[in-house]
Length: 200
Image (cartoon, rainbow, N blue to C red; front, side, top):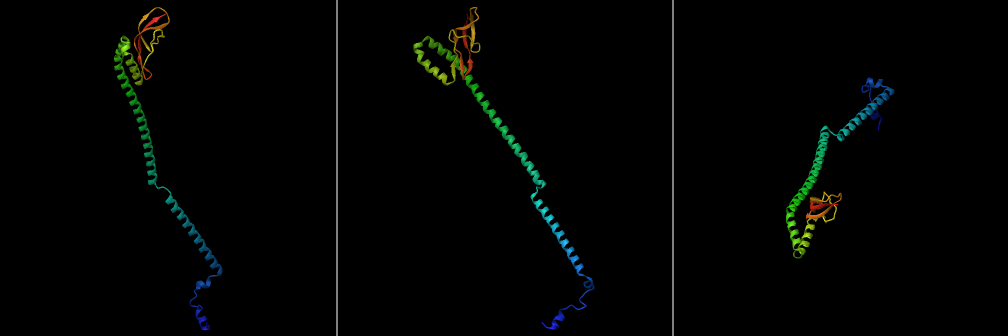
């Protein structure tokens, strides 16, 4: 590098403005601090904007909130409908069972006069009807029918016995004779026994 080139690189008086000459190092420091504060303020504003942007991304809109409320309402309706259906199904099962029992009981009641005839025939011809009656009583038990005890000497029970004749003047009522057999159906009184009562 020669001397002429160094001289050429130096600014001449025409290139230096009056403002450059008036600026002191203190002014330059002040300008730098102002620029730094502006950069910091801009960075803070940028950070706030970024935070708001993220919050907006993660926050639910009004439409999302309405959809959530609608979903909760539909879920509640579905659960209520399911519970109503379960109650209805349970009630239907109970009604079916009840009607089934009523139909069975009605059918068995219609058979009772036939049972009475068979029983009278067995009393008239015990040797001929004995084996038949054993099988018949087993079949009745399988159907849920059982006889109400009305043996002479047993105490009279108005829930189980229907007294059509009463003899004597005593306070103790006992069965004197069975006129028609009574039956239980599945543990319930289907028909009370018709009896003659003796007061002793």
